[in-house]
Length: 131
Image (tube, rainbow, N blue to C red):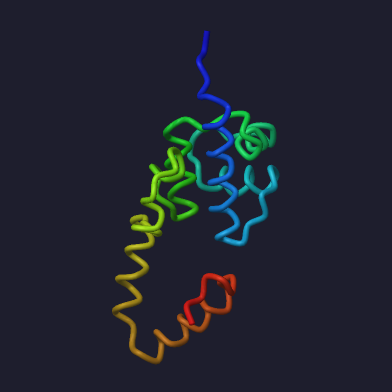
């Protein structure tokens, strides 16, 4: 018989998932979560029911899915799963693609960097912009 984590553990995971989504201005909708997750996951796509189970504290994703969620939402996987304080210590980890973008950005001329910064600023949720 398959063992499940205790209910409070699953509920706490769902709260952290909702927090990470909110930090990215993504509504905690099973449909949106499924769609965004499946864009980033190379395995079998998840269903709306699975996304709903994650959001409602019915289940916790397995390790490979947790890693995709953590990478996509730019949060520490350990924080997402267990809720330690590492989210505050290291709020963002970069994927290989993100590192390549940063390297490319650094090679641009200052006027081109300003254009890219203005574009990114216009796309980011206001609460992510540093004043």
